[in-house]
Length: 262
Ligand SMILES: Nc1ncnc2c1ncn2[C@@H]1O[C@H](COP(=O)(O)OP(=O)(O)OP(=O)(O)O)[C@@H](O)[C@H]1O
Ligand SMILES: [Mg+2]
Image 1 (cartoon, rainbow, N blue to C red):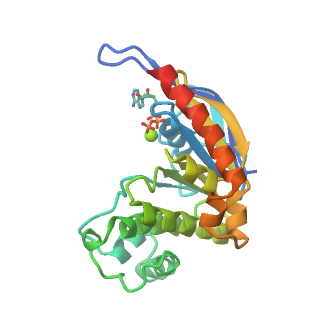
Image 2: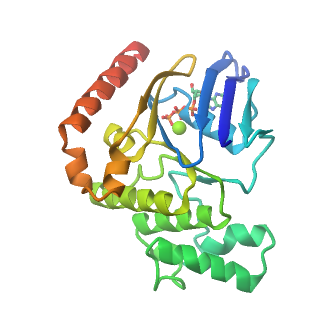
């Protein structure tokens, strides 16, 4: 069970005098329950297209996406998306932002605030329930976005460069927070990043994609997030020889692709 992408391809049709774009070709990928799958790859290799397929914002040109054996035919509450730029409602406070998805689903006020309150606590936002979100730092706003994505108890959490806009220290803390939440809630995660270090640290599986047409060029199984969750410090994990060796290997693959594109 879980999510299965079966020989999926996406061609964006020709538009404004530009030729069609083969954004993805022959993508096979399984995301089992409890998997944390990270996608890396040069800009334009189709990472967001793949995430949008799983989210149901886009249909494959060929192939199919199955969730627990059923074809994905559009967006649904079983999948939540966290974007790089948190799509928050700036005029609402933290509580109402986190509860917003539940409101759209028709969950009544009291139940809504109870569930939202639980995720506000989980994301370390207690005390800020009534603060308007425009007053919060970028890192806190991103946590509001993640809390909101979790409220509908999705099977799959889809994250498109969720930490890309954060400073280095906040980013490392957010990585640890997301791993702890993943460990507690047992979601399947599909996570896109441009940071090789972040990818290696967070994922249980890594796919490295190549452009034109976008395809999965390399796959790795990763042990590092489990080591962190077993008690090793994040810095210790990231400084270990195995981590550094794999980081260099993956960087070489990505640099080779960037050169091929230029
Ligand atoms: N709606 C669209 N119409 C036409 N072409 C598109 C559309 N969306 C994306 N593309 C093209 O498809 C290819 C893959 O785009 P995608 O956004 O999936 O890449 P990405 O790997 O997420 O890139 P980045 O790392 O820059 O976010 C690119 O060549 C892009 O220009
Ligand atoms: Mg993208």
